[in-house]
Length: 112
Length: 110
Image 1 (tube, chains in turn brown, orange):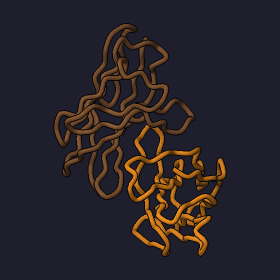
Image 2 (cartoon, helix red, strand yellow):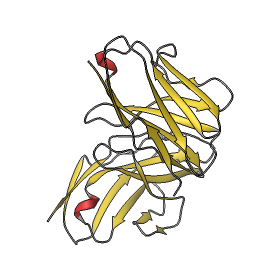
Image 3 (cartoon, one colour):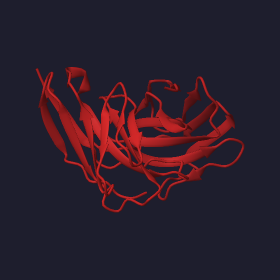
Image 4 (cartoon, chains in turn red, blue):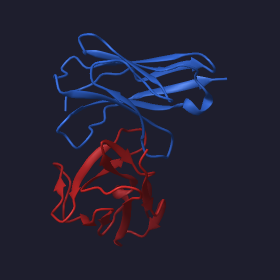
């Protein structure tokens, strides 16, 4: 199947700093990518849909000014968690669609 | 996306078949049935999907009820590496996102 990568795989940061997570489709082009968040022992929750060359569409309750999404090319979308706080600590997963939807390996963010 | 209902957890013995059920009574005619699984600390992995007919691939089989209100994911011989959370998800053919329910946590005993 298609491959989606994420970088970094884990990150620890201090409260108040910003963290950027990259999502790449390695062997296909994706006009649409998706960002999910998963808290321990919970299911995935869709945060936003990232569209190449246009603004992302955010789910209800997700602050667009806090979670900045940039989809500058057909193979790269980035999620920046701005002014991160401990409650933002979570497992962030991206996905891209090529016929079916493929997921990245996830990025574990820990905010101290 | 329509809702799916799955048991919270199931147990299986290694080398035995596993049948993971999913109810989707509100499925519409164009909804595809997708199955993903998620191992600890990893992103979801695509397993299989279908619309009306039963489907087989190298990972599993998908049996779809005639009325499409339920489906069953079949792992023919469970291994310890199959221990994961299995998600049954409905997605419209025009939709781009998958909405995850609670999934079934499969435990495989040696």
